[in-house]
Image 1: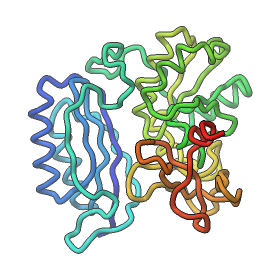
Image 2 (image 1 turned 90 degrees about the vertical axis):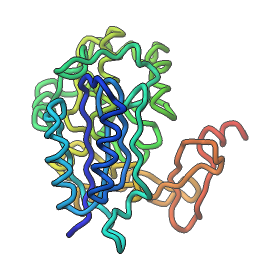
Image 3 (image 1 turned 180 degrees about the vertical axis):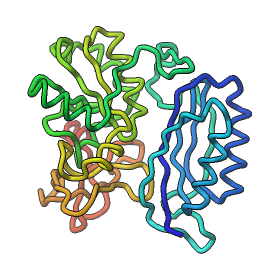
Length: 299
C-alpha cells in the first residue's frame, strides 16, 4: 500500500483531554501509525502517517467519537514505509495534552464552542477566495499566518509576511500597530492546513480588523484544488520528514540560496542549535547557515 499522511484539526470542547490522549495513543499504536497529535480542552490537532488502509481505519475510529465527527481530514503523499510498514516521514508517535493545540501563547483569549472558534474570520473555500479576489481586486490582502521562514519557499502572490520566528510572536506583532492600515481592508489569513488561522483570525478580529477571512483547509486544500495554476507560488513547507511539497510538476522556485543566490527550495537548520529558524541553502552550499537574525547580530 502507498504511504500517506493525514493532516487534521478540530476545535471543539473536550471534557477529559487525558482520556482522549490515551485512546488516540492506543489507536495509533494498534494501527502502526506515527506522527504528532496534540490535545487540549479546546480540541485536537494532528499529523499522522502510515499505509492507506491503516489511515482509513484511523479516520473511521476517530469519527466514532461524537465530538470528532466533523473533522476534515486532508490527505497527502508520504515518502514511503519502512520494513515494518511504518511511515518514514515521522521517527515516532507522540500524543500530548497541552494548554493550546496551536501555540500562540494566548489560551485565555481563545473561545471555543461546539461550532468551533468563536469570533474567528469568515471561512472561504478556494473557489470563494478566487471570487473575492475577482470582486475586490487589489483591495484583498493575503496575510501569512505561518513563521516567516516557511514563507521563504512559498506564499500567496504579494502576501504580507509578518517577521515572526514562532507562532507566539504574532501577539506582539499584531499589537505593534504595524498592520493597522489593513483594518479597513478585506484580509485573508492563510496557513498550512488552516488551524493557525482559526486562532489568528480571531485575534485580529478582537483587535479591530473589520473584515477578516480565513482560507478553509489552508494551503493544502487550495493546492489540491488549483495546483500550480492559481494564486499560490512555490513550495509548501511541512513539519515532517518531507520538509516541503509541491502541488504537481512545474511548481515555481521562488526562493534563492542564502549563500550563492542560486534558485533553491531546500531548507536547513540555522547554525545555532537553539534557533528555531530554517534557512534556504542549496545542495552545493552545505548543511547549515546563519539565519537572518544571526547575520544581523554579527554585522
